[in-house]
Length: 149
Image 1 (cartoon, rainbow, N blue to C red):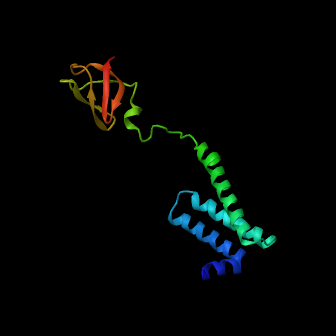
Image 2: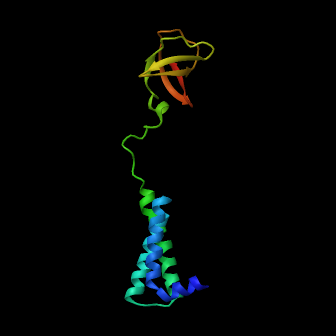
Image 3: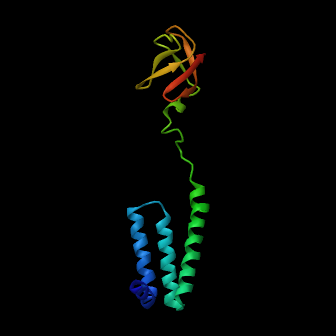
């Protein structure tokens, strides 16, 4: 109860400190939520400095600003997401779909191996001799699926 009395006694300064603590938490626990709650607390402090209001209304202002700012963040900033200029960067197998390559080892019992760039990939498809041209049509994990080209 003493902590609550300090909160009521210092009013705007309490909100300012809470806002700064929430902004500091964002540095330790990143995710974007604490920064918006921190900004809501600082705006509540500014409202309290300009026009003093009772503590229930302060909590209401903070709650509305907090929910509104997180909602705007989720809707506008996160939904936008920004497309990547290299969407297949971490999807190495998907990068090769559609390529035509020449087998330097035969595919036997449904599996073989083929070098692409600096990596030797496992391929799956119908049995074919070495030197045959194949097209990559898909993948199953790190195994490329091929068909005769």
